[in-house]
Image (cartoon, rainbow, N blue to C red):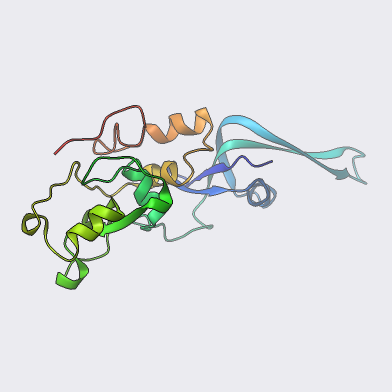
Length: 196
């Protein structure tokens, strides 16, 4: 039982991935208001003394819960190297070559030493060689160019990025419908990068 369940808020906005145990708790507490997708877990409990029947719970791949669970949803997904590297398709956005996660670094387009901030629009995936060559200089100072523009993923895109290898078809179809125009083609490996 390793498949994750996609949790939405009551309006259908993606919020997070849940384990089957966390989802079962939400079902048991009566907080699941509607569901989508297939039933992916069928749980059986004990036998009720009152009815003599075994309790059962069917967990869907996508569940929506009311706002009592997470009253303040995130306005912007957290910036992590894993999500950043997935956003940039594990490609160095300076030289254009593919790398494994451990071979990539987070490069600040405007270096932090020069007032650049650590946020989605100022960082790209870079190989160690390109990152060291750029150093704390601006792109025009070291004659380098970006191969694609950075973008801030929305929550649907972020959830697809952080769980990219374990998303069910029905979950991906739901998430894909909420991708922004900036991400189309960049979150799906088969499509080319958006060239600047």
